[in-house]
Length: 102
Image 1 (cartoon, rainbow, N blue to C red):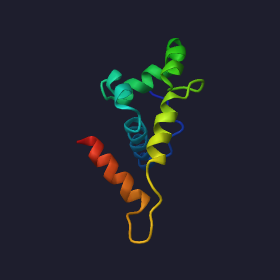
Image 2: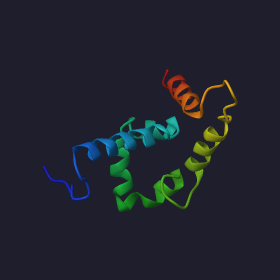
Image 3: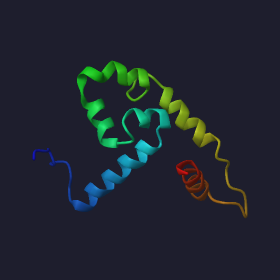
Image 4: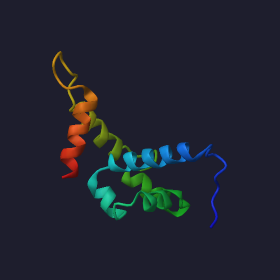
């Protein structure tokens, strides 16, 4: 097994990076996730392959295209600012994520 682990400080930080990668992957539109069999690892491999740069840009996965960023921004702006007595933004996001996962 080979890997460059020089940038990972410890096990805790490595786990945090994996969790963040999964969360970022889940923020992508379902159509994109399906193209990678709902596997964040496949997406990472795809993006890291120089032969896929143009296609990744067309999909909005790399700078140059804004398709995915626009979709994420639309989801975030649909969440209203909490008013007194209402749910916090974090609670609203958690609720939206749980509804999306169903």
